[in-house]
Length: 414
Image (cartoon, rainbow, N blue to C red; front, side):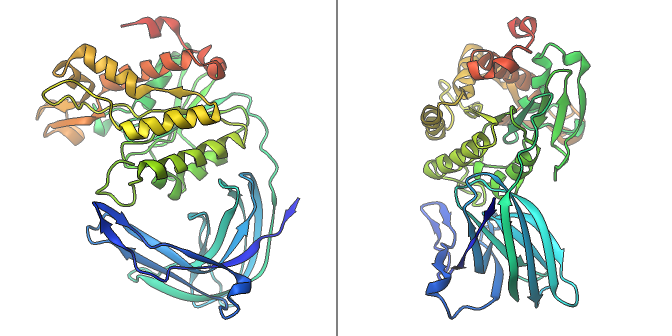
């Protein structure tokens, strides 16, 4: 089925509002229909801005954008264009660079075909000039001669289901250099019946080495989690797109964000609770549309006892996840509440064993000089919380095919 994109223009006429109440406010786009702007031609501008702390870097595209009613489905897209003034161009869908660094030959004619993993009911596609090294902006004439889009055929159902993990450093897999730091997604496979037969390798279609597959005889666990990412940055960096490219009907995805969403000092990561809910709903809708079962996971708690009792970490974000799970009638693993119970049973001092605490000389590698960290997990902490996640999975009907593969003896170990 062919889809006819509609042409619009996007500009950013006003400067960024900057830091307001401890939160950085970037530029706001202005979108206009082609009919309302007959004065605009084929000139496109791409520019980069860095806010004063250096942690927030933003790129903006001004010029033509094409709106595609993708209905959350994958689209096969073909573009023919003529380009003047740029050595290379990239194609962006909803802000994600899905076709990077396409070289522009001397004649300026560019043809590119790709599959767009649309994650919104309506997606915006732009072909934008790449900013040359050492510069902050570029202008180019980009004349689209033809643009076609049609719904892509759904990938066949996998013989062996995959359980994907999309999260941050508390779930990520680590190289031995960082031991004892461990993400609970790195050791989740250990609670499955066939754990002794695991085969570990780097995932295909992955732009980062931390993305690991733990393949068991009857299921794959693909840990695509990566440190420092929020629900927003994981999407805009294209990592959710990469996951969708691997997912098949009948697969599952555990989604745990919150640690980095809450960090106001890191503008490219931070999302307020309302924006967080919007991003999480995008993940849910785009998974469901591909017959992939999303499972929300409240973020594992920080060791936040201070001089008193432990409390729920990220309460506003946890509450949003509970509401979304109810709204969409999808599974939720309340790992925040479960990890709170575990830490309370242990007590403040003993709970340090679950987190990244080490004295100088205790380990080689990244923590040879010691570390005191109440957020990231030790090997013991990762195993403890992975076991708890598996126990929670066991009680969810939608996860029955996965839960049936768990090892009850391992789960019953204290």
